[in-house]
Image 1 (cartoon, rainbow, N blue to C red):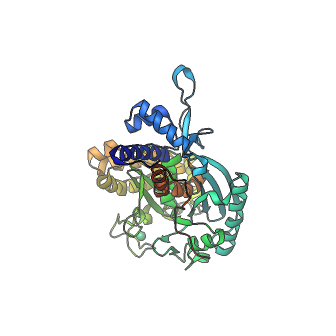
Image 2: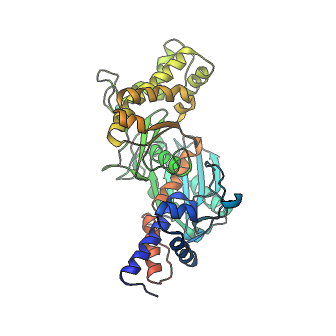
Image 3: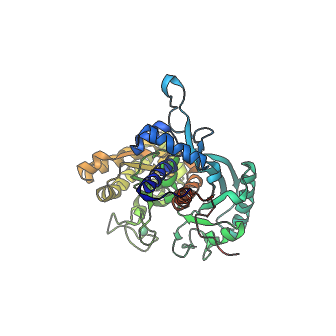
Length: 420
Ligand SMILES: [Zn+2]
């Protein structure tokens, strides 16, 4: 049956609101959906019946994993029935290339990770080998989850280095020597015969924390990855903000000291030169020559070493200065700090908050909380999955339109696919 007129448009708009809410939330009860959309319980019941009938949503087998919210109970203490987008609506694949590992996972559209594998591999120097390994692992996780490749709507991918998003190539010879000039997403897409989208680690970390971690359910969040480099992923209105050239969030290369040391980016006194991993290690090494890695600094700081604690606290203060400027401009509700330096916990976060109190306008400083990321080394793979989940807008929209026209569903994919 074809729906027409203003009533048809209203129904379609309401269906979109329900599907859009579930797309962001993963799973929710009927009461949650009513609350979030402001629609009456009876309207929601009708919409859910239609959407279930069309195979777009279904009862979720269980909650998301990793579980981060406390178990909920409905009236009479029974847990409420949770709804999510149906498995048939599609499957997302996520690939994370670390320096020395490859991690691959599969998730359904109700944000449930159904299979995951990790393998040690020297990624930095052997691009082709890493891409082949990932190709093999994708086949394995799809088999683990009993998912047919036809159901995959997109593949998200992260690499441990800067990406030129417009060309899709790796930008830095010093960071990823084996990958220079390569377009990893095209290479991966050709191997998998699936559409692949690539992004940097800070953006992936931001998406992961918003979908699964410390920022779950929040819409204006800045994720700071503080490791060797310092980068931020910016989520505004629930969507990743990348800017005109994809460089949004490069806070590591904002100037904090005009007379400071030269930076690998060619500028001087960048945040990274005073608060990045190597800078923290370098400061400690002036008095403790045997400290060679950020891991060693973190270990000694945890054991109470005053110089190591001071170096980490000062990095927190400096990161906070840059974050204060970002808070004045964007007014986020939450800052999530991830990356190796965040293992220092409050030792890093409290000085960061102190800088926000000192340098951000009071209203911006008071409205933002600063927490540590909770996803650890799974953050990038989960973010790669979320990259696909975030791109399902258009795909779901087409299915809802088809539903209004009474057409059978078809399965478009969410990203462009490289030709064979
Ligand atoms: Zn720089």
